[in-house]
Image 1 (cartoon, rainbow, N blue to C red):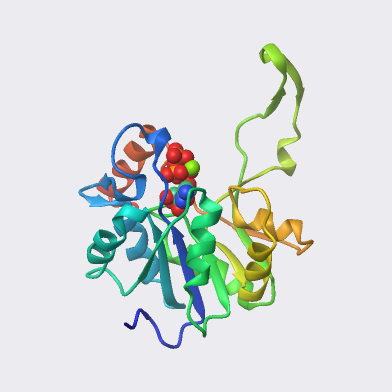
Image 2: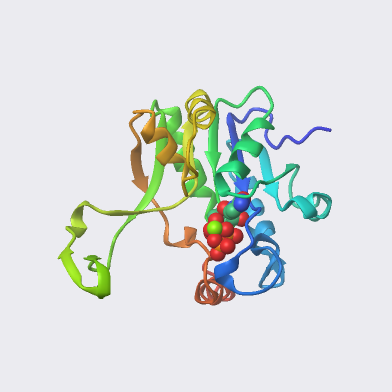
Length: 233
Ligand code: CTP
Ligand code: MG
């Protein structure tokens, strides 16, 4: 089976999509829940496939849904689908293990960031291509952040100017991500964290508001609005 998009592309995108979506409330696994009539994962993969550098897409699906996800995505783009694991990190590791020889840039991109523009995928990939081992898209933190202790007592105010909110896709030179996962310890919520532990420098590039992660019902409503307003491709 060939699961290749652009044969001249140098990027593999891993799409962890095996989470339950507990914070979204009861229902199907989050990546399979509808947004404007189509599963979040379909929106995400369509935008990934529109990025010209992408050679291969590997989706880590809920283990019970591998066949249905394969069938669901077949009309959208050629993809490899593997069963995910109990933690996001295990899902990413399973997808990474399925990347064929060829792409030397690997991006990890949450299915839940369903409206991420192809331009962001390209800009992260370009930053890796230009020589950075690890690249993350970030946004400035807009709220004031307090550190809080027991009894909700404020301990202090964090200097917001030094903080960034981190999105996906996170991009890596393939060998760097492979090495980080090979020695991974406790599960982390992002892949750059694993790479940081290896002592590899991680560089930030500008993120996108449209790369918001659908986590709670409010996020789903916002994503619906962005789509219906024609603002999210
Ligand atoms: N993910 C995964 N495998 C897991 C857990 C999460 O592939 N075992 C994926 C999710 O499908 C999602 C991405 O990692 O695309 C980011 O995770 P998150 O937003 O936390 O999604 P869920 O784990 O599904 O949500 P929740 O934590 O609310 O259950
Ligand atoms: Mg989760």
